[in-house]
Length: 80
Image (tube, rainbow, N blue to C red; front, top):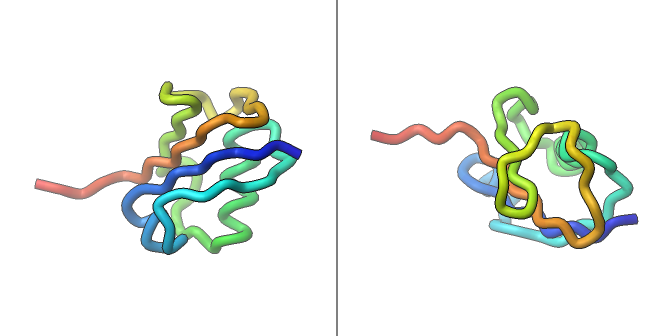
């Protein structure tokens, strides 16, 4: 199990009710982690609408994640 620091923005923050949390997960990639969190928290956005940042750098969904990593899920943002 990995301990991961997860940050949420915009609609994901609203749906989770938190800006950030520490989670325990066996997920090997951001894609697997996001799928787990979608199931756990009932996020409405599909993965293809979200960008992922691992340790302050944009990452591919199939990148490896490690214990202690910081993961940020960034949904599309409306503004003007």
